[in-house]
Image (cartoon, rainbow, N blue to C red; front, side):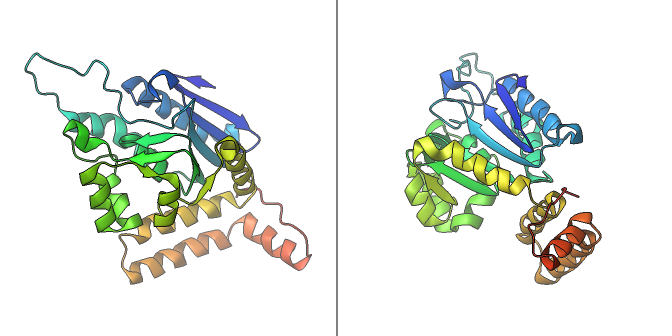
Amino acid sequence: MEFERVKLDIDGAVGTLTLNHPEVMNAVSPEMLGGLMQAMDAVEDPKNGIRCLVMTGEGRGFCTGANLQGRGDNSGARPDAGSALETMYHPFLRRLRNLQMPFVTAVNGPAAGVGMSFALMGDLVLCARSSYFLQAFRRIGLVPDGGSTWILPRLVGKARAMELSLLGEKLPAETALEWGLVNRVYDDEKLLEEARNLAKDLAAGPTKTLGMIRQLYWESTDNTYEEQLNLERQLQRTAGYGEDFKEGVRAFLEKRPAQFKGN
């Protein structure tokens, strides 16, 4: 499926969402954000049968942040950068956060600015060995956005989050792995193959349950211990009513692999 600056390929139960403006290293434009929202409609449409989503970039880069071409304005007007976040970026990020299926990011090349925010939304963040992350905002006089000031200190702590944001230095994939920012690093030519292999495994799992696991971990960062125990109880009850739980128990007792249907 082709959308504005975005491609969505469906292979069985795996959807691959590709940022598709390689001439500018997949820098984000309003057109691309519109395409991403349309693509997410297709991802979430049950008729398409997608049970795991992979996100990557076309060409040599994952995403180099916002597309600044045409932003040089000498008129003296002061554009409202915050408005663009609320009307265009935040709706897409919320879609990713609330996705009811596993989400894998395959980071090829640079992930800079809001591109880094997109990459770190993955439940599993996989990187090409040559890739790197960059909090580029300071270089153009802006603060970090795309939720990066929320997610970075939770992943690597305040000190390293501050270092990345204040210094604006490149963070190579191998160092990101050492810091616990990403899950795995692969040779460049193996990245997409490995990402799709993992996605196929996830897509064959109990999809609704995996979506609830996502919910548990996202909400755990703000919940109290008691609130989290409560949420676990509620979602375990829901999972226990599902057909996939029944199939999982049958498969265990019959000593065979489970054939989950995603419900």
